[in-house]
Length: 141
Image 1 (cartoon, helix red, strand yellow):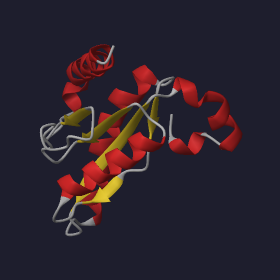
Image 2 (cartoon, rainbow, N blue to C red):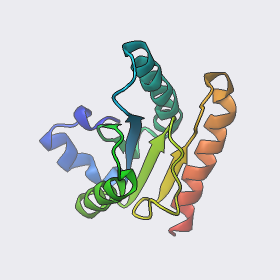
Image 3 (cartoon, helix red, strand yellow):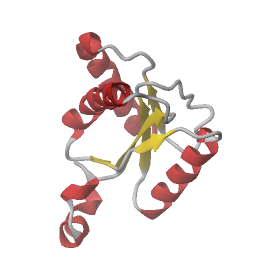
Image 4 (cartoon, rainbow, N blue to C red):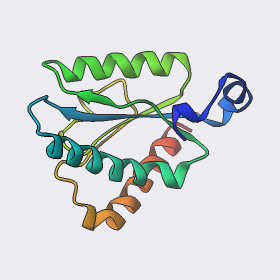
């Protein structure tokens, strides 16, 4: 579910069921033309669909971090740390255009970075992503 699907009362009533936060990272540089920016957002949307749809009752998608800066790793770690300390047990960072390493984004529990994500291979990615998320949840038990 999206963060905007909740109001205060529905969040308070249901927050115990949503233990995982998905933080999308687009990685735009600001130099993209409008069609290039749209294509980047479409690739990220396709990736997010692979994550959100199978796990709708457990994952909340937060607003995307759209633009890349000089110190993405530090910024992403800071956001993950804050979000995790306030509401969630697990944090997933997802990007379809930037190569992100889990060894660098240490405050997240899972990094899904599919550089050059090709929508024609979505079925293959969807099952791999599902396994990685389930593995993340199982490892913590």
